[in-house]
Image (cartoon, rainbow, N blue to C red; front, side, top):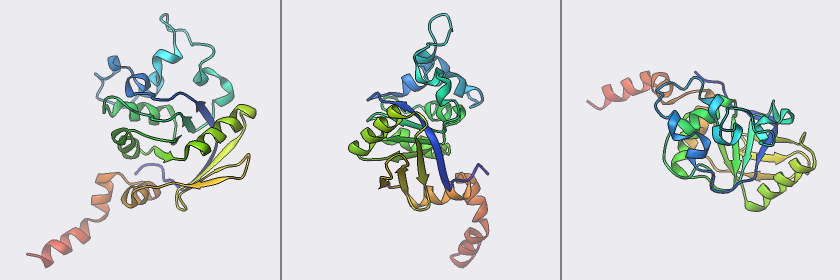
Length: 197
């Protein structure tokens, strides 16, 4: 079982860049690994570090202001490009539990859900408001309420509803991956098989 989702309230890491693709999230040279461990250290690797491996001072993930944030607020069309699951592994491995954007690439969105990262799609206006609030005060908190499917900018009190597949919502709330879900429902499955022989 994974960590269960309910209501998450956190400051946010702002990444107001559109069309962030999976190669930018996790560069191709890290795709040889078959283990998720350590991938978070290389999230946005080529933006976070220079060619000598030194942290790029003005990149947001290197700013200690956002060190404890578990919500990433990203520009439109997040996760485009190749379908590499490693991108979602890196996001989860870094410690993000929620990514908010006004649009996600479909495959990447599913990969995030499969790795217990909640993609929250909001309107363009709401996203811009979030960026504005965070810029004005980096300590701005956002509340993501999965049971109610709402996201709230605590700086303004404005909320929006977001959509999520019912099955994935159940799995996130209960802390279940697909295998856990099948094991949890094994008795029901066996009863159905017996009844339908």
